[in-house]
Image (cartoon, rainbow, N blue to C red; front, side, top):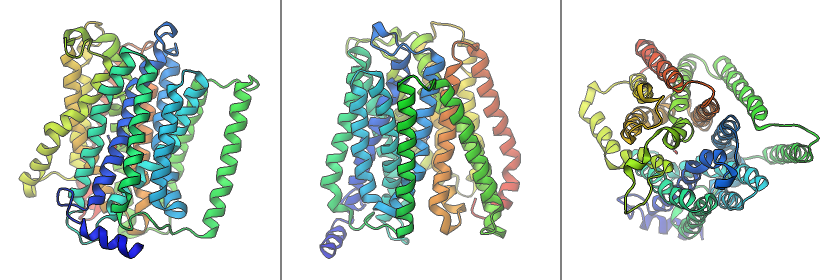
Length: 493
Ligand code: GLN
């Protein structure tokens, strides 16, 4: 059977835009996963703060921001154990399958109207995302031999899949959720992931041998079982105590504890990485470069990922959405804004930047310089909102401009960072450094979510002003670091 599979895989080697047909399977799996993730996320904070009469949970914004920040941060954090499990225990192929099934189940839980299924659903989606997201990307890499020149362009096609899903879903889930019932929106997110899973099962035969093997030892399996048992027991005991009222845990309190723990994880991890005797000389200097890019990326995502939190609330509460009502789509809804970023990206900016960097040739900026531009643009996106932030009748064009600036920033930082990580990481620590990249998203999502908690208690112009000032300040600091970073990264940056 394996011989036949690899024979078939070579027969399909150029069937998907000149790429292996397996890329199509992974493209659509990730498209549907992101459809599910962003469709649900577009509704999440709006659903939590909506009053009970409007079908929402009636949470105060402080609690909604805490839950949102913790959920999105955990979804990215879970990719670290998710990658490890696939490497050592299950192989990527099965991890992605289980991830997709769990995400669908989690969304179906959310579609059932009760507070318990709401939290349960979020928890299941976190685990599912951790299993699916990092491993589907690893499998993309596994479709190509190390010499295959098509690898980078394969990843670019894959990024289009991410954004196609992220573009369509806020419109579909937002339309159903905000016009009919929040839970229909969550249901649509679940149906999307289910289609993705079915497509993945049928398309698996085009994947050749990608993701079939794992490198773990029996000791790894034993460690996994032990950690899994302890974690499940701890979660069940805490949930039981909380539900029975013995333990008084608030989402805000839990989120504070989580934030401190996340900070400690970052400090301990980098403390170890940067002093470890395993990495010396060039490798250690490059790890310092990775550390600088990590800090910048975490800050960038803290601003950028407010798309689903503060900016989503800004669309709903401060923007005059009626200006864009239409007989075709009816009322223009806040959640529709969540698709602007991906729309700008797929219908123009991604192609433009790919062209621009090639066009600039040897004048192409270094990764550090591009990070600096990325932070500048995300900061500018917030800066332009400062003058209008205290109004409740803001023209919808302002947020549109913000998302345009944010997308430009994202394209200067996100693909650049991913590629810089692969170039700077010591080869034997590649998986771990990919995890570092997701850790930056996790920290960013947490801060971006927590900032929504102060939406009502802190004057908005000051909130946006602070975010803008921080980003622009770090952007300037990075300009001064361009030269030292070139030295640290020794030629690859
Ligand atoms: N938009 C990209 C994705 O969903 C990157 C998001 C991030 O890393 N924070 O995969």
